[in-house]
Structures are given as structure tokens and as C-alpha cells.
Amino acid sequence: MANMLNQKYEFVSKEHTIDVVDGGTLATRLIPIITEYDHVIIMDCVSVDDAKIGEVYFFDFNKVPDYITWEGSAHEVEMLQTLQMIELMGDLPPTKIVGIVPYVIGENSTFEMTPEVLKGAKLMEKVVIDFVREFDVNIELKKELTVNDVASQTYLLEGF
Image (cartoon, rainbow, N blue to C red; front, side):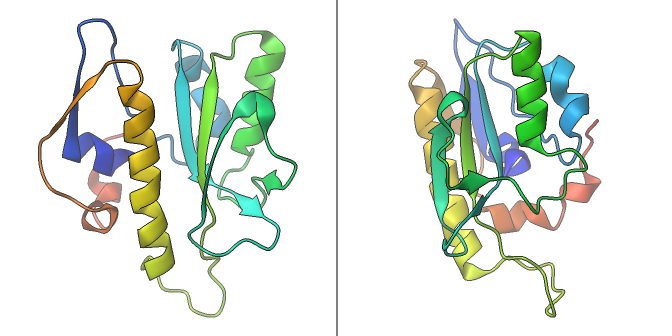
């Protein structure tokens, strides 16, 4: 999702700098990066009891609903624990979470995204764009893309 946002949009503001970072499975290694910002929005997978694949949840880190967990993600140390560590240090900026319920690979070990996840990814994109616009940021379309267009090439992109 982060790589798609970077390739699809340009974020323009005289007052703010907007960085979209693909943190992958880095979790605790993101601590010095997260603490540098005034506001953060995390996009990740979440587990929700009785939820359907592709459902999207948007919430404030300080008000995580009881039914949300990050169990089962690819992080060695979960993003939830990373944010809790930053909060304990007193360095956590206001943080929003956009979480999607993933398709969990079982017998079908394909790496293709399900139609439900692709639909949810569109909603995640809208939630992130709407959140960024709240800061009077002009968002310009650079290239029409979907998350599926970028997903197969993500491993080629430079990162951390």
C-alpha cells in the first residue's frame, strides 16, 4: 500500500512534509523514524473476531477497540508492541491505524491478493488520503495505479 501511494500521488504542502514509508516487517527498527513525526498513520493487517477478509478498520492508537489485535502478522515484534514501547518512552506522536483483515495463507499458498483484500485496499487508500487532506495537503495524482499494479514489484523498490 505504501509503495502504491508513493508512486500514485504527490503530496504538496507549504506547511507540512509528508513521507510515506514502507516499514515492512521492521517494527522496532521504525522507532527512530516514527518519533520524528508530528502525526503518524500506520497501515497494517489486523485480526478481528468474526470479521470478513478485506474489512477495514480506522481508529486512534489511544483508543484501540477491544476486538482489534495484530496477531498473526509477519512482524517478529508486532506493530502494536512497537507503538506501546514508543508510548512508554513518551515519544509517540498522535497515531492513527488503518487496518485490514487479510486472507491468511493456508493450503492455497498463492501470493495473489483476494478480491476482498483488493476491495479493502481501495478503502484503505481513501481513508489515508482523507486523513492527509485534513492537514490542508494538496494531493496530486501522478499515475493511475492500483495496489495490485505495484504489489508484484515491491521487492524491487529501494527501502531500508
